[in-house]
Structure formats: C-alpha cells, structure tokens
Length: 71
Image (cartoon, rainbow, N blue to C red; front, side, top):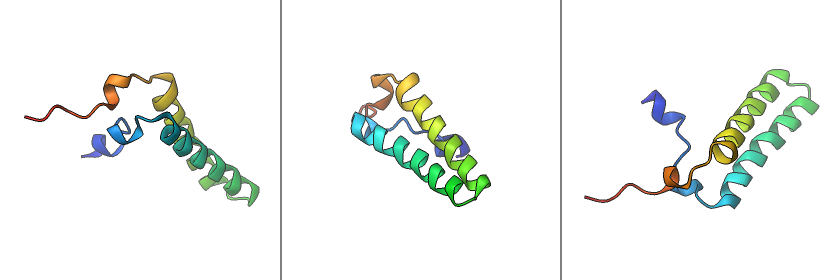
C-alpha cells in the first residue's frame, strides 16, 4: 500500500504537459511557502517537486506509463 502511494508512473502522466504542470505546481507552491516564511512546508513542496522532476524527466521511460494489458 505505501509503495503504491509514491508511484507516479501511471498512464495519466504520459503526456508531457501533465508532467510539467505537476512539477511546476509543486515548485511554485514551494516558492509561495518560502516567501511567506513557512520553511517547513516550503521544503516539503520543494522535495516533492524535485521528486517529480526526477521521476518524470530524468528517469522517464515511456513503457512505465502505459496501461497494463487487459486480460
């Protein structure tokens, strides 16, 4: 169950624009939190955005984002 929670390699994120929006949203919100002095939440969203950038652009493999075959 916990491993599934961190799995972002779903067919929903196959289009590059969805992956970019998810990353930019997290990173932009981290900036908002840091500007308003919330260092803990800023760091949390910064780490989440960095994780998404790593998963979506650095280790991206299109095969990971295809739906499983139906039986």
